[in-house]
Image (cartoon, rainbow over all chains, first blue to last red; front, side, top):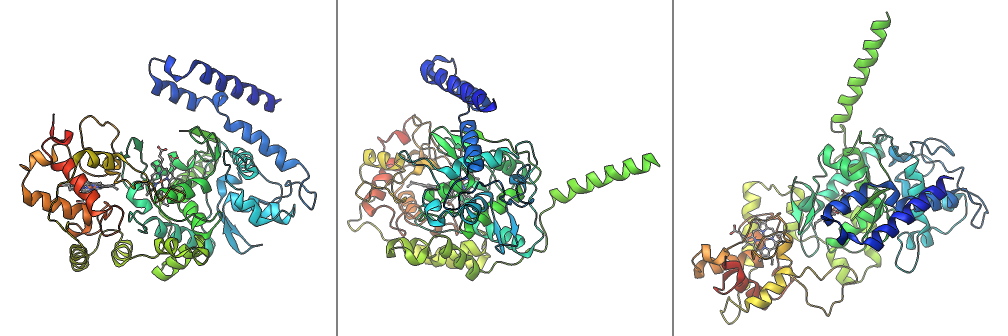
Amino acid sequence: MRLSLWALGAAASALAVISTGLAQSDNPVDEYRRMLADPFANPGFLFVDEGEQLWTEKRGPKNASLEQCDLGLGPGVLEGAYAQLPRYFPDVDKVMDAESRIVHCMVTLQGFDEATIRRNAFSTRSRKSELEALVAFVAEKSSGHRLSVPLNHPKEKEAYALGEAVFYRRGSYFDFSCATCHSQEGLRIRLQELANLRKNEDAIRAVTTWPTYRVSHETLRTMQHRMWDCFWQMRMPDLIHGSEVSIALITWLTKNAEGGELTVPAIKR
Amino acid sequence: MRFAVLSAALLAAVAVAKVHAQPPRDLPHITSERLEQAMRASFGYDQLPPDLQARLVQDEVQRLCTEYRNEPPADVAERIQKLSAESVVFPPDGKFLGDWKKGEQLSVNGYGLRMRDDPRRQVGGNCYACHQMAPQEVSYGTLGPSLLQYGKLRDFDPEAIRTAYIKIYNSNAALACSTMPRYGTQKIISIEDITHILAFLFDRDSPVNKE
């Protein structure tokens, strides 16, 4: 039922936006903002439904579903799990973010090949990513939950500290660090507003709205993608999906956003 | 009794909120060796061709500005500025001002040096990412100061032109750990491109210096 409701709503609104165009509104910026805030106009929910199917279906060489995946709160517990990630997992002796943990479950439960999943982690114009849909599904199960990242295990503390160190690291052609663009309030790069990700308030606004449907990308994007994207802007080589630095940054960002209420999938430019 | 339980619960709630607001404690120190090891592993350094490997290796200025989080002590700042000033190469023909129209294009252009960018296309200066320049261009960033009327406000003074050339060639010569890229030293754009951009700032006919 919910599937068809979202699908209908999203399709109808998307159609309305396409057919009437943004130009019909007196103020295109207001119209755009209105659309971003309307869940029925948010195609991100189509990814949630697709992710649910991928989660429950028996798939892969082991012909198993992901229903027994342990996202940190025990096998099969989805409610609130995304809001408490990244965290330390004793079975792999590592800190993992939601995306890395889902990949881990696809490998261990379903027998999929890790390198292939990572290579296809981000949708392109010609190929859709299953992982993006799975992340949307898992994250939506924590919508309305407050972010609360455990920082008890020494490896969780190390991930946080490493994330902070990466945030200030300058490099490549432009000498950029994350701090270059994200350590002051109210600034812009061209017309894009920049958040001060060191501040709880700004970090909450940023972190509680990922995964998000990105209108300019015509697909749903995850926090791993946002990290990769900002490094691309920084003229760095490609950040490896699920790498230590990606998880460290996400740990640091999510801890800075502690207490914020997750509202996903969001929709952004 | 019931009141006591309630207020205890309330106190506990307040305590939790307070804990959340505090920065985490007992964090390990991340040495620069540990940071660089994590960076190399996370970008697959060993599998990269030499030109991409080079992007992962910090030069001394980047290393020091990382270590001091852009606030180096006076002696380190002095060393950074000296090192940076020494790297500046001036135009071989002594001509600082090129073609302001080309300079305008270079200031708007943000293309280049990203993964999968076409290496045959012109790399931009992308000054508008951080600066206001000509009044007609409304899409400008605010990380740097406005450069409206830049040449006119300085009476088109040759010394100011030289200073601005140095700023663009190596922003750290005047200010250690500047936010601004070091366009010449890092070989982002050519010396000739810098003279075009300089003309955009200093030519009397440039829109930067018009109302």
